[in-house]
Length: 257
Length: 288
Image (cartoon, rainbow over the protein chains, first blue to last red):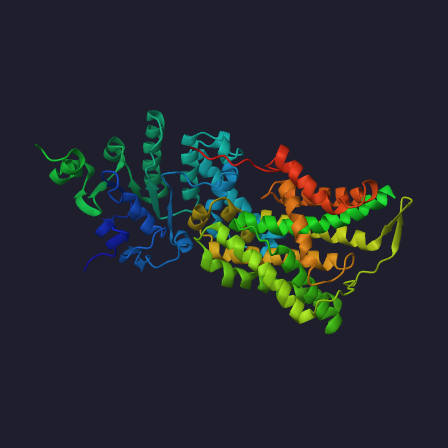
């Protein structure tokens, strides 16, 4: 008897024109772990995240999350199943404030009626207060207090990345997908990020699947890693083992001459 | 005389504002400039006329039926003609809206004929004396209804879940999907709202103009109003509409004949020359 899998991808394939971006990719993420996807540029790491969050429609394969096949859902249904994500090139609502952006992370949890909301009465009021309390906790956690009421277009890039992370957390996911969270951050910001990622796992109990190029970050915080090249899995194991794998070394550095 | 002109300009400005609002709402959410907005307004006015005058439905019920019908009408246009074009160049969709406008005009001509109707839409025209000025009650009605409608829309867009979904979709569709927002439903709803606003504009316009298959041309004048306010800005559409309405009304009295009809376009050209982003426009900044 096999225990029920928390999250797994089986035989995922997708083709863009003549390019086979993913070929029979299978991987499993253990609950409560931080799992990294690594590989050279164009290996298909972001494509996997896009297939999971249904931005792309995979040609074949399944994505199973908590016993349910989520690979046939519509893109807007994914968040309600407990999967939220961030993007490599920040996708925020740029004319809204930091606060409103994070509140939108809880949008799928709004349960009040049109009239109730318009009058802002009873249940709507209680819900809004609950939401804002939760958002304030996240703001405190990610040190966003100073930016709370500024529009996204007026805050620095590194902070925007944190807002995106905050918005993904506001959805209270069970699985968090991070696409190159450290890209564009300086050394200090990357260190903060490493602590936050560990805290998200420890304190919030959220499982994390991330695409990352910064090998130091991967070695420091991740429990497992899967390496890719040309849309196929090269190696799987602890980050320390994966980087020593001869196939992985070859993919990064080329063949020994 | 001056104050009467101001008030009648304000009333006309409210109509422009409502049509411009229709342009802006649909544009914001879907990036489509709906050139059929004026003709949808005409259909709304005719549907109200049909239920009220031809079928003798009681007033409130007739208006409600008109609004429900128009909401469905907007949704059908979106679903049947525009949704299949998602992913095509925006230009193609704008051409479709132009075609829809022409189509509506001819079909309305076939159904209701080409003559001009008198239609008071239940509003009684009587002079109202206010601070020594004699005003038309219809003008006051128009302003009152516009203010209430704008207030209702304000609450809808800022408070309700669907309103926030529409706002989010207009800023970033991809992120909206990830927040659990069904973008297709948002498009459908915004067309319904656009058509409802147009129908109300049509019902308000009929008593001060005439009801005619060609009345949608007035939608073209709402276009400078939207540009003046800053295309894509809701307060801009309202302010722009009112400025156009009032200047047109004043131009009719104080400037030589012919200026009244061209005022809107003169304002449009001046705006494009000195402040192309409009009064409340946000200048688009792309990170390079």
